[in-house]
Image (cartoon, rainbow, N blue to C red; front, side):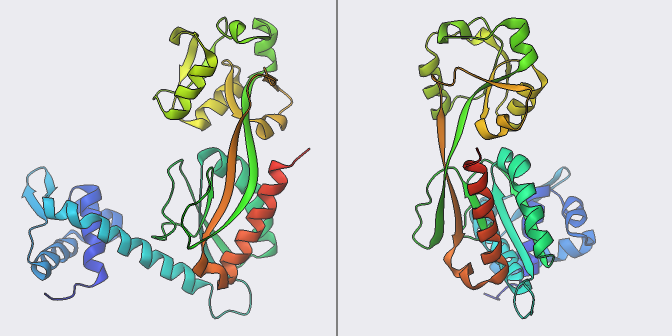
Length: 297
């Protein structure tokens, strides 16, 4: 078996994701014939049929599905290598650092911390991916992760930031119109902002809420950013981070003595990145900024 070069795997992943040679070519900035030659070359090198050609596009075979995770690992490792190399061999602290965080933390909390970091270290470039999915630091999908649970891998450098508390909040003028609930029972008379899909978290919350019926929800969404925007717009009562709400004088916490949900917040990084100046500096800046956010008076 001939050892295929990385370009063939890159085209393979692009065709898998786009479903066609033309889509993959656009995504990669290559010509369609070049991508086609890459797929043919990879199939020949591996002695496997990876796609069924059809008028509607390229349909992956079982072999393609089986190899996808390995190609994605190559992709992540290649990106991690380039990021690590970007921070080596320079007198100043310089390089690219990829961070992953939840949607709300990535949009509402990290930009101010990262702005302060890059003012002091303009040679650092940040790649920020926002998702509530836990990125794989061992596979190096990201260099640093802000996680709402304790990392369990031994090869990670982890630092506990503290609890980010969640609680019910509403816009001040909404409460002026509808009244402020003083008990769980009062919540049944209000417009609630809730989730669309059932999870362990929502089942726990439903247990806390007791017999509130589904028709009390004015809006359902699985996006935490939608929840936050809806609370800010005065659509109803919803759950958001207490620290974020405290920044907005229009938001009022509801039933603070009856509901507080602590999110155990951690910062994690692969231990091999300790010696990378850009990653180590970014990790320290995130730790300081998030700790300041969590402990804000």
